[in-house]
Each structure stands twice: as C-alpha cells, then as structure tokens.
Length: 169
Image (cartoon, rainbow, N blue to C red; front, side, top):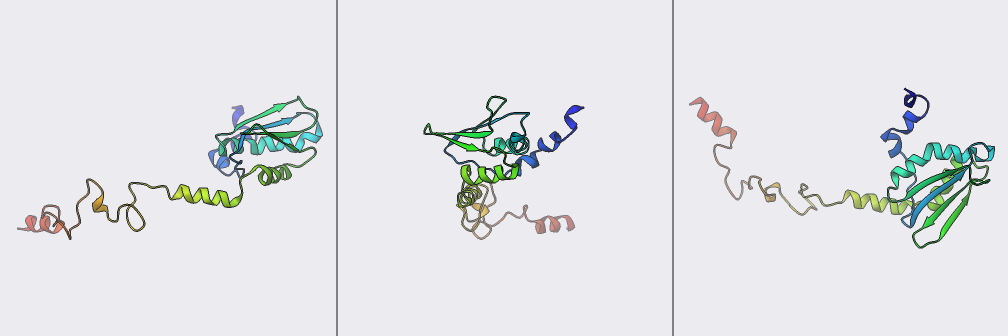
C-alpha cells in the first residue's frame, strides 16, 4: 500500500490538519504558490507546501488555494484580495519556518481577532442551554420537561418513594 509509506499518512490525519496556525485574513480570496521542483532555492517553499499547505486549505475553507509547479524561475507566493489587488511575497532561498512566520505575520489574522472569533463561536446560543446568563433560567421552561415542583406538585407515580411504598404494601 503506497499511501501508508512516507510522511503522507501523518499529513492526511485530521489531528494534523487541525494543528495548523495559519488563519488567512478575510479579504484574501486566492492563495497561490509558485515553485520549481528541481531548483535548490525552492527547497524551503517545497517543504512549506508539503507540510503547511494542507493545513492552510483546511483552516481557510473560503479561500481558493493553488500551487503551480515549474512555471516561474523564482519562488513566490501571490495572494489575490477581494477588491482586485494582489500581494506578492518573495520567498527566494528562505526556510520553511521563515516562510510560515512571514505568512502568519503578513497575511494572517491578528491574534485579538482570532480570540474574538473563538469567543463568539463559544457563545453561540444553544436552545439546550439553561441556567445563569442563558435564555432559559430552569429546565422546567423547556418544552416537554416536567414543571418545577414548587409550582406544580409532581404526581405520586413519578416519585420513587411512592413506587417503593406501593410495592411494600
């Protein structure tokens, strides 16, 4: 089985894809990488594409991610924005980590925006939530649940004590 040999099984796992750190800015619509497969100056970008490109695709589903091989003599990353502009990042003779940090710094979302988005995602209103700071204070307010015993007494056949008494007598 050739797909179980080498680094590809690691890269194909969901845990690895979720571990990505690159969240591209919302203005970015196309993320394209230009590289050659044989030139030594392109080694860092080839490694970047091998290890981080699947993570970028997974973390940014609204961005069209492509890489083009053996067309240009110099390696670079070109990003097209939603207003029609484009940004070119020169990655000639850079290492994989340098490219990753530069992409995060220049094209990524700031950390405070990521924290705000995570907080908004956690606060999403769920109708099953009840209690303090929720729309429903008690579970008795949810349709189909038993009302509060303080307002409506619970029937005897629902109480465990009544069943035990009826069995013993």
